[in-house]
Image (tube, rainbow, N blue to C red; front, side, top):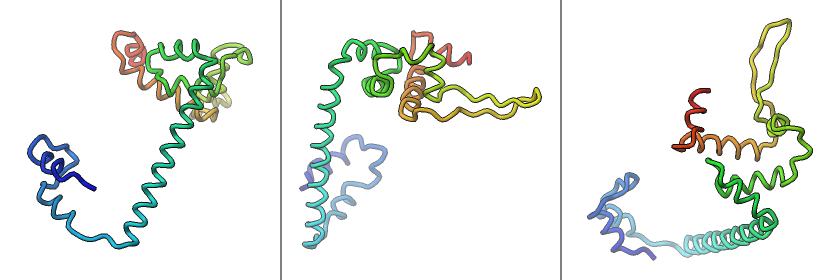
Length: 163
């Protein structure tokens, strides 16, 4: 069930910052008995976890099958700093390969909900906020921007800090 040697090794070597108990305290906490119901519930939860993991593998394989048609676009998107596999998958899923419905990049950014609203009345500017848009694409683009701002040697980091 639990490898006691690994617990003892955790106490002798470098322990993670999350492990605050000593190996003796951990071994003492393992002393006890599980009832039949506890073992049944643990087994049921482990089976559920295994089935969820199998379904995730099935979903990932299905995603990769559908991405084969967009292989070139998928790899070009990943070449952009801050855009990884998951972000590229979301961009393709939400926008697709055909961006002709959007006259320019500003319309696409507005549709994604990345443009701030402009509230002005009688020449006075009131508070602005970003408008609602495609929440999956918006989240993916913001995540990519946050990752791109920390990349070095691309110029995107300097551009971010100039804003």
